[in-house]
Image (cartoon, rainbow, N blue to C red; front, side, top):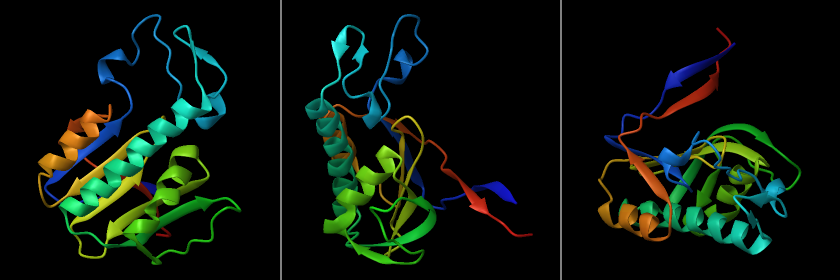
Length: 169
């Protein structure tokens, strides 16, 4: 049975998005949400591969900023639901901070569905649909938040983290 469980005991949390939340659902506004949207037109602008990669890179930079702010050097793959042939992760596997880029990219592209917990228990990263990323930390991480916002990401503070878990009971 799959169930929704409350996840993080960490006191600070954010939902990270590439667009201002007030735009979502606004009549006439269109948003790209996937690598497959490259080449399509949104609000009169064709999404280029370069722009898509630029946005992915802002998410990777945000994860690294949060990791630095919480002294998170190693991450555990704490939940693994899906991965395609480009990945060979296992639940519980330890990943060094410098190797999280492909994991972030894979989650954003839907090639991977996993969560990362810092081994020092100070940071949690998970991913959702439509290029949402969720972060929880034991620190307010003001510089990481400011850097992500300067890169053009939108962070909604105090967003409760939830995750679908497999439960055999």
